[in-house]
Length: 302
Image (cartoon, rainbow, N blue to C red; front, side, top):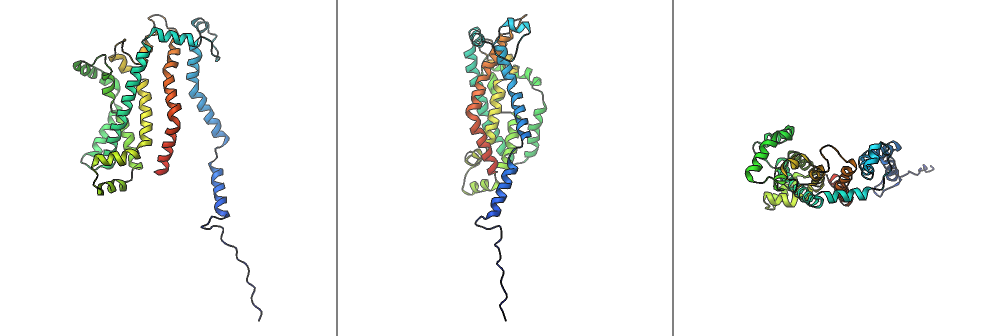
């Protein structure tokens, strides 16, 4: 009898060594990951809408009062920005206000990040009686308008003798409910319970576990919280305007002094606004890439 011919059998398209099928799958995933032209167009629109207010402030700040009052202002900047900026710096305690804003914003941002991360670690990973009720109470305070606490807070600052000092601005802002809620939600997902149990087995205390385990895991979320807090404190006007003296202001309070009683020179005011926004732009330019990379690393690790 003749032997039955054996047909060659092709190997399976998928293999542990990585055959053509994984390559095709990789190319398919890469094609899906590419953004569509509509997504790019939407991002360009969002970018232009975000930049326009700052650009318009620069345009108005580079004009003179005559051009603004004539109503013939275009989107092309004028040539008076440096002169207007020099007038702003000379007519205000500008550099003192700049230093005060840097001190207040930096101290508040660092304190909010540290204390909110500590509280978030407790609410997210520790077990104690009344935890859920306390967290609900903290979140509920976000619904209370800031204006309701101004009068009793001013009385407290007056009793302490802090009126006119930076401590009256810094101390009430050292921690906030949003920061606690933010870090609680972040640590619930980013910090595995196994790491905490391993630290306890190794004999670490609660604070050492927080410092060596929870705080490194919380860096991406803490970086975002610190940036948001720095910006909000830098641009805060209401409470510093009430509690600080004109001779010891922050930048928003100092810029308010550019407005006269019956006349407002918008070229000077908006030139001052651009000068006050420059440090924030520098912060984004310096820390933006590291911030985004930290957030992506945290997302991948989670």
